[in-house]
Length: 141
Image (cartoon, rainbow, N blue to C red):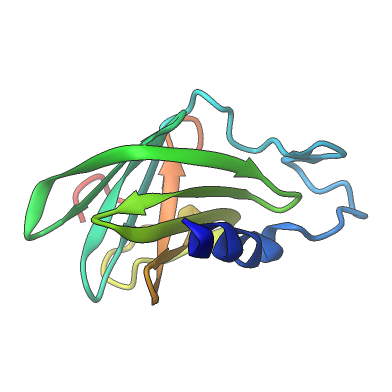
C-alpha cells in the first residue's frame, strides 16, 4: 500500500501541468474532459490487455483472462487527465488517461486518449475512448 501511495503522485505528475491555454477539458479544479459516470474503455498491445473503468470499479482483462478481474480503484483528477489506482493480484495498479490522439498500431483506428499503465514494476502504454468520445475508424478492425 505504501508503494501505491508513493507511485500515484509520480504517475499523475504528467497530468499535473498548468493549464495556461484554456485547453478543452480542463478547469481550475482539474480535468473535466471525461464525466465521472462515463465508462472508459482502454486497450494495449504487446502484450494484449484491456478493460473498462466506471466510477470506482475497474475491470482488467487479458487473452489469458478474457472475463477479466474487477477491483476497486480510486479516481484522481489532474490538470491534464485522470488517474486510477488500486491493487491487482497483490500488485499496485496505477493508470493515467490523458487526451491525445492514440493509435493501437494494429488497426486503422484513432483513439482520443492515451493510457499509461503501471502494474507492479511493469509499465505499459495504450489507448482509450468513451461512448461520448469514441474512436475514429472501423468498428471491427
